[in-house]
Image 1: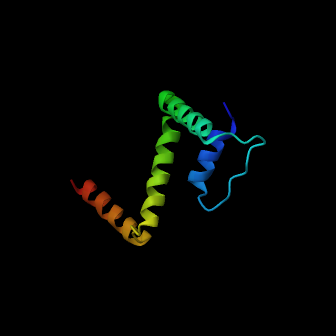
Image 2: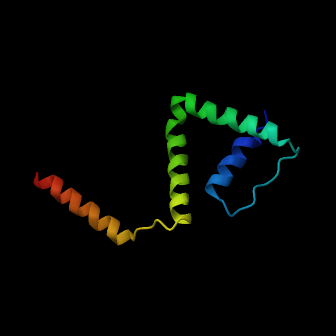
Image 3: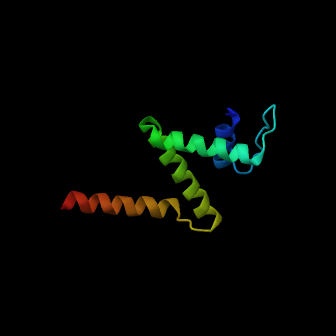
Length: 91
C-alpha cells in the first residue's frame, strides 16, 4: 500500500486549487483507486476516525455548495441562529 494515497486524497479535498506533490514512485490508477478505497474503508470502520470522515464530508458538501452558488451571507446565518435561540429560550 502506498502511504501517499490518503495524503493525496486529503490534499485534493482540502486544497482543490493546489497541485499535490507526487510520491517518489508513480503507481497505476488501479493501484491508486484500490489504496484510496482501502483507506476510506479503514476510516469508515474505525470509530476513532468517524469525526474525521464526517468533517471531510462536510468540507466536500461546502465546496460543492460554493461551486454551485448556494451561498448565504454570514450576517443572515447568525441572525437566523439568534432568532432560533431566542425562540427556544422563550418556550
